[in-house]
Image 1 (cartoon, rainbow, N blue to C red):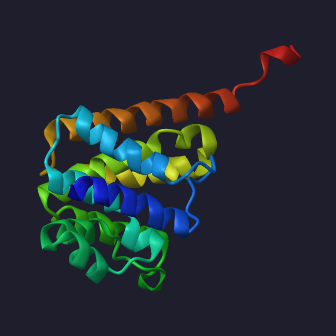
Image 2 (cartoon, rainbow, N blue to C red; image 1 turned 30 degrees about the vertical axis):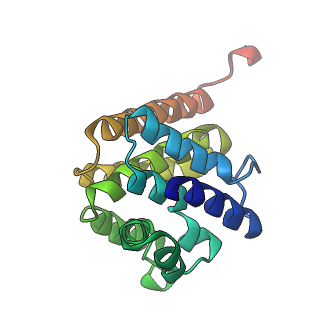
Length: 187
């Protein structure tokens, strides 16, 4: 029951906040569904993980207070959501400093939070190379560093996100090489 409530709560609050997928303008629920789908495909069925996966961005992106999550869903789910909520802020310095802070922080979060983060990264990588080549180069490097430090989560899902990172890196190299190569049609 909590998983279903978490799903509808997350979909509603992201809708209410006007959140959309960057680049595609799809409903934010598409991202949440993809994250949960990756978990289910990896055989993860425990209620805390699935509920926290639905809720993983509500504090950071929809302005919901952690105390609200704690009240509605209990301490265990709220603790995982808290672990998945980015702590670095713009005041902490430039992007590279904030990313380093997050990488270090994510290395010490629970195996449940790391597992959800693997699925979150895989979802975020799903279209990024096609939609924003320049940012994708930055993002994939940051996430490669994060995943290399997050070693406590679900092994199969970790291997999956590593393979996604490697695939995106390959696509980026191919795209870069095709941009650098002289056009054959001009010959």
